[in-house]
Length: 176
Image 1 (tube, rainbow, N blue to C red):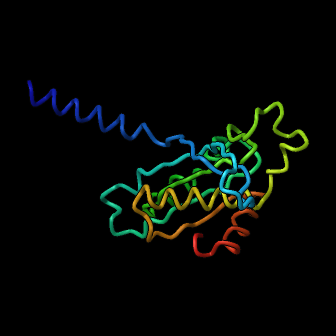
Image 2: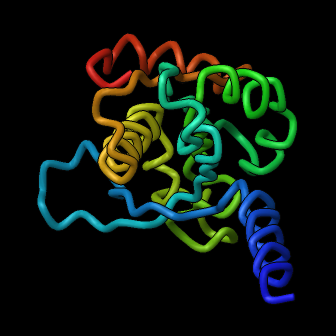
């Protein structure tokens, strides 16, 4: 009976681990990456990470890239839920680490109270340059946190997010 209980417990724990993906997290970024001053304020951007295929021992011989979604104008969960081909098919085939970053000033990634974020003065930090640097810093952190310094990063997105993917690849080829 004790053996059966252990097997059942192990099965329940395995199911719980699988059901835990994806995971929502937050990452601290500078309000203004273009300000050379060391005392620039910061805030958190939200991101989603799913490492189930990346950490799967069955994928050890695969390329295991980081599949990085360059978030655009909306809640990151909406984009994640509509990108199943990447988050399941491609990630599984390549053993990929899935990371979806939320764009600053959208979803839950506001540097100011949502009611005032787009007011004059507060919206000056909503730039492509700041957004791309948010993503560069997040990828650097992810590479360290997942011991993936040697892994390729494949940026992708749709519409404006697709343009961000192209621009970030051109501007930061050492990272993407």
